[in-house]
Picture 1 (cartoon, rainbow, N blue to C red):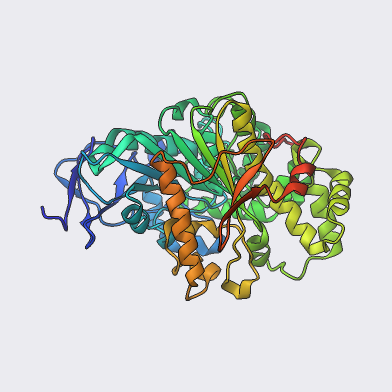
Picture 2: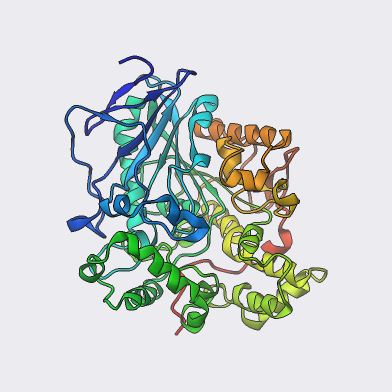
Length: 514
């Protein structure tokens, strides 16, 4: 085969990809596990069976079942979903020579653990691989009820186990694509960063990667009791039991709508589910004591991830995109702000601060409006403080962490989104003009976006290559962080007021409240 149809032999068989004019190659839809349907439904991933001949690998694999959030369910077809060919990955390599020894970046997508697929245009790894001289791997993992619901007779955290299986595939095969299995960096954003936080602490993932970049780590991890209670509501919605036997009889394409329906009624379960209900979060990783022995912050502080060098950070205005999508921009009332402050403020079990949570925020930010407080407390509870605490836990456990904050304001939507959640994704991949990036950056991204993307990509690929991200490690005295702006700088952590409010809070598994 010529350079336009490169072939690589994996442990399961030969795959044929596509060449690019630059000399790079891409291989899409490579299975790393058997389809988790039929007898394998809700089970841990099983290694893919070998095949004869050459497998054409030029199209993305089918995505797992998707929630209707952001219209993601429209991107999948029922028949393809039910067939279960979800567990595939994609490889971009600038040099498909087994002797190239290039650093490897493995991307874990976000999506609140209910949506996400590797085939979205913003996750195309071609530019990152080509210009960064790295091998880029993206992958699918089970989300929603299939991947994270607590089901009787099934292992917990099946989505995390899928990620481990993909990393094992990388270990065993990436050399054939020009990568160095000894230089693997996992990069995750949002739910992908939460997954990465879990992987840092999981014995099953030990040794599969040496560096990690966690972008906007969510603080939502469930206790087994909370997860089981939510799963009972999923099952009740369908008139079945939350067991492998009963749920296994329900077509995969049906389950996301069930989770959506229960999540939409979250407020009705507030007394039992606490902040989880208000946040409309139906699934998350479960601290089950087996797959995930402890919440990441506790485990890292005990030294679980000390051998993995970490970059972790968040955007300045994390929750602003969610407010826009929920139609709350300019519409937040005083009562809504009061509920948010009571629910998500620091202190108390699971971060539910009660009346004191509202008092401390109003005192700390006396000039803030109700809408600003509503956004701020949820940015802190959901992403900003969990990310900062993850870095501090890593340091407490004897490891190293570099911290950043993205403060550059997105020009899309008239600039109303600020430095919102998800803005970092197009900057990492350099794909600035299609899908979500077009909403954030506008139809014609400014030159500033292109330059900032170049700097972010250089930081991540430099870190993956072992050269560091370009700024010094965080320490709890100086608190120096990289501020990614039109003119990046290094400065003391800018969210000092919020840091102080959350200083004594312990992030852990969210409990069942009653």
